[in-house]
Length: 333
Image (cartoon, rainbow, N blue to C red):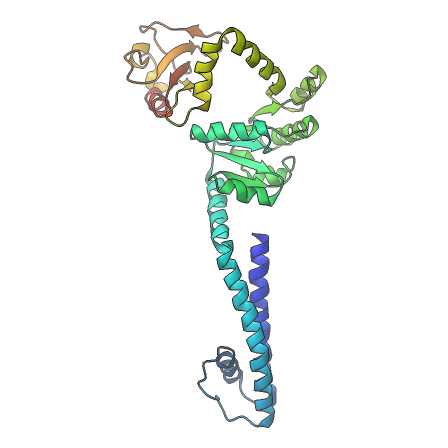
């Protein structure tokens, strides 16, 4: 956007200077008024050939010759710049970016992903598959162009900067993922995000296998710290001892929009006092409720009975397609 704005302003400035010089020349050399001088300059530069506005003397004709020669070069430069913008898709990209920025400004309850690392991109892919709004924060502006092509919202800048997080909508965000390659950078981003939005949920990647670093990330403001290496080791062990279960869970993570997902759904006023049977989905016509957690408790009740009464604030763990899960969330609300 800055490069495009600079090029457009430079092109416009050259045109304005040329018109001003031509008008001034006719005013001082021929003694014409401002409007006649401007009109003569415009028809000369545009090569329309309407004829002289007023009769020109020798000095005026010599000035017109130089204006034509200079005007041809300047107009060629201007049209070259315009053609370059059109051919390279600069204007199209500018309008696309303006639409994206407008979309980001309207987001609320979205997620911010800091870092286009492998964990960060995996988070974005999952959020995209489950139709959750998010903004990816990258370091370079060129990366924004890359992820715009995937229809992702992205901003460029230092993720530990309040200005960059503000551009990503940190004050309206529900959560932020710190997925940079450096644990120190992740700690700084968590600290900044907590200062910008106190209630925001912060999940941080821990790259180093160090218990002390985990404590530092938590003290910096992270709610949850994830160590990909540790989780990778657990995954390898599970692949060996319980392959069918792992493959089932993995199919949900790697499936497309029609694939199944586990989801946390909070019961609203519409579910208060009603039987779970109305929502359980055991008839295979909707999302299946596999567990319920009551407000203020950490334990989940697995495979709850259909006659269990729901209360507002209960958290239901449901299994289904994204469409089925959205339908269940609407009914519970």
